[in-house]
Length: 501
Image (cartoon, rainbow, N blue to C red; front, side, top):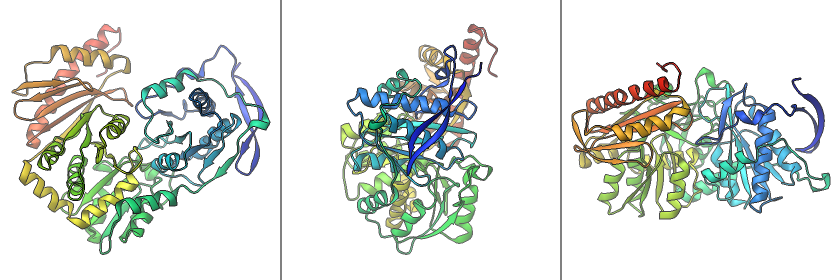
């Protein structure tokens, strides 16, 4: 028996709606497929089903009740995927029948706008339906608590522990679902915080067909920039390219900057919580260099430490030292960056994957706000010129990364084995120090480093390296791969499975 199809009535925008609900027999367990990673739960649409999304929504309501926030308003956001609005409505109904008033945008919006709304409207929290940069056959769900920062593990573990089918309160206790404008309040705040004067600046903005379209571009225009739009039409298939702002996916943006003579290219990922930059001289700008340059700009008129992840460049540390500031290092994942920003009153926090936030803003990575800040940095001193100056002062620095396939259930064992067997030299350089904050990071005598850590979203191990030359980076990455692959093979063999290669 596949399940029983019943009909139920729930609150929706403008009144009650009737929906079909699949009730599975007791011997099935759809919750087994739900697992929260670094940024909530993501899966392909064969697993990411309305039934399971409603279970996560009910678990979220139970978690809020446990935290003493039963009945308080919540925000729901969603990205540009074809299925996202429907899933957002499912979540809205479940939270409403648990007594919460629900604020829902009329269109897809960037994830950070939900985080901003949670804080400024004093909400109990919020839920976003998005698979971020993943291809269109994926979707995802993440929860933000009342502080608007990414949920810490204790919160996601609590939600996972409450997974169950929806159970409505009495109809007289239901909340209402209403559509709200999240865009303008966020834009007004961003303009007040950055206070840009972008007159004379020309920017090519690339939404990658995601939720930044009509939001980031308009914010840049309000700041005074001339904006040339690129891939700013709604397309749930993202033009056939996953909305990941990687160098290979942004070649058309780089071409547009060259062809138009623009000062800067700016791109957001699918849900616009991250950004990438293209400059006239460098083309795609490594996010590490963007971080260092932006921090250097902020320190001209302000003070405070920077927070960076263990995989992010030491160039940030050199900029901090030159200004008499410090750097706090965290594990990978913006939730750790957000927590450290609060603990240390940081001026900026970020990670090498393009997620950043600044003091005075919500502690969630925000590609919309950072686009405005990037434009302001460019007006003050062009990125190319500023970075040339930083590298001349602090030395050349290069970074790259690769991935090694590794089953999720073997990641921890492989990393533990690597920590125990790490040689005294890596790529012909002595290991001066190791850092176990997130995986295994080997700091070498020449100032370079190699990091191996488990991915929080894919069955892979990430291998990162930083050094003074691109050739040295590639040598370190090759050495890292040579260290890791035999351990993965051995782990697979001992588990009774075939090699993943």
